[in-house]
Each structure stands twice: as C-alpha cells, then as structure tokens.
Image (tube, rainbow, N blue to C red; front, side):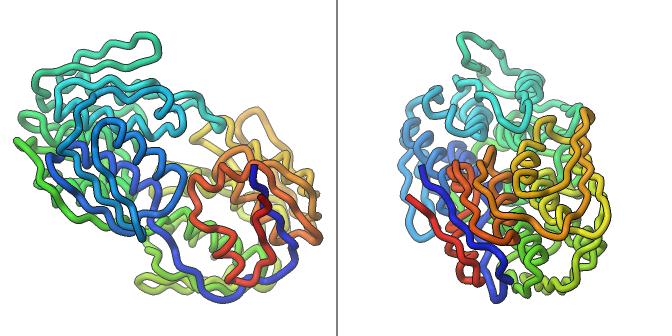
Length: 417
C-alpha cells in the first residue's frame, strides 16, 4: 500500500486550484441512469470513488468514457437493475443508483452498503421515502429490492436531514406521477447542484437549498451537459493547511459561499482571509487562538472539516471544545494526533477537549478514513521532522493529486510506493 512522507516545518505559499466536488459528482453520474441517451459531466475529479461508480454503471449496461475531467455516460444500453455487492461494498454512495433505477425501470435490486468507520449511516429514510412514493420494498440476503409499476408523488418528511436520502428521493420523484414534497430536506450545495442538473435534463424541481423541495413529476428526461461544482471540503482543507503552516495561499476555482462556516471559524481564530467570487486568500502569521466548534448540517460547520480543524486547534493558544454531532465515531484521528504530541481529551458524549501545545512532533501515523487522512497531512506539514502516513488509500477516495498540489505550495511531501 502507498504511504505519504512529509518533512514538515515549511510555510505553504503560492496558488492552488480546487477540483470538482466528489460529493456532487457521484449523484450527478448516478442521475444519468434516468436518461435514455448520453449525458456529459465536466469538472469531474480523478478519484477512486469516481472509478467505483463508473464501474457500477458500466456493470448495469451504461457506456462511460472519462478523459481530462470530462465523463460521458450513455444510459441507453442499461439492461440490468441489480447493483451487486462486490461493486457496492467499495463505496457507500453506490446506494444512489437505487432511486434512478426504480424510477426508470420500475424495479431495482441494490446491495445494502456495508459498515462505515466513522459511524452508522442507515438507509431507512431512503426506503421509507420510496415506500411513500408507492414502491414495494423487500430486503433479503443483504439486498434491497424495490418494485413499482409507476411511482406516485407524495409528501415525505425526513426525521433528520440526509444528503444521500434527499438526492435518492429527488431522482426517484422526477419521474413519479404528480407532485412530491420533501420536508426537512438537506440543504447542501451538492443538493442544489443535482437539482439544477435534473432541471437541465427536463425535471421540474424548486426549493433546492431550502428545507422544502418540491418536485413535479415529468414523463421523461433528456440528455444534458452538466458542470460539477468546486469541492468545498478540499477548499476548506487547503484553508486550514495554510493557516496551520502560517503560510500565504491563494485558493482558486472555489466558491467561498459554500464554505462560510469554516471561513467564520478561521477568522475567529485570528486567520486573515480575503474572498473574491472564485478565490480565497488565506494568510497565517501569529499563533491561532482556540475556538469552539460544533458540527451541524449545512450551513453549519461541516462534519467533513472537523478532523482538519481539530489539527489546527492542537497548536492554538488556549483550549477548544469540539463537539461532533453528526457521526458517533469521528474522533478516531485524535489518537493519531496524540502520537504526535497533541493534548486531546475525549469524552463519551462526542466531545473533544483540545489544549494547544507549542508544536507537534513527527511520528508514523495511520489514516482511518478520508477526512482523518487529511488531518494527518496537515499535522505532518506542521510537525518538525519526518511524518509517514500509512493507509492513504482513504485519501485517494476524495482528494485529487493531493501530494502534487501541496508540493506546488512548497511542501516537502512525496508518495512512497
């Protein structure tokens, strides 16, 4: 397995370009199942998760072509409604094919996603929503099987906002008869991106980005050309890394409006931040001040930035309290940070108390999940000495060419095969 080696202690300086958002690209690619024709998706990042969903669609019978960040998907040849375990187990987002398959073909059989290191991610709200649209749901031998001659619009209420649940039911409802209303829907930018794309395909969706989404069903969708939005979590990761190394970094091709919670907390910590329409400049200098955070559904502070921000707080002046309210096991990275000299106390209530220390020390560490790997990269960039991070395949799921991008900014960071 590959490892990342970092010789820390260097300021990050220069410019970096942000890739397309993985969490936007995955549902967009899944939405191509709804179309009897070819859709084109631009600004698609080269990532393991993108390869996984491409393999899944090709197994269903779609023809996919991916070159230079452009993926075309021809769904006219789809002749299979079963998403098999060997493909679904590689990525939980594979559940996103359930709604489109059911809506277009009236029948879908999708393997239940496996476990997740950071906590439970049940799909019960996906299934109850599809049932409300008229689907007959049956679970047997690890597979979800859904059938419906024709889905019918309905009012659906989510107990808690769910991003993939909102996306799955949006895609199912676009071909349902009548109107569907999703209440307490997720409001993330990726939801808006999907709704805009479906509307370009001929859907009738309004309210995306709010807690209430209205979908008027249509008979069919048409091919479209879609652009994936910038990755707000990659943007936030480079922002925190610039602050942690006391550097001066311009982040290009991003959307500052999508990362307001992180900008606000970094400013509160004393980091200088300037924004333009598609650029953020981050300037560190004095040691940052400790600030408290609580992860919340969008537009609150994103759970996908909690690990990176905790790393910054490890060298802040004072004590910060970090409350993880989304996933119950998302402090696994804290033990690795403690190996590097961080002073972190974990409670049983998903609360981490982080006392700032003067500096972190290099050590061999192991990534446990995608965002934990990014936090350890930031720690390695700050620490004196050589840090080696193992199990970086987690990072390859969500960060495109991360070692090259950091190297352009002056980091001494290489991949070891």
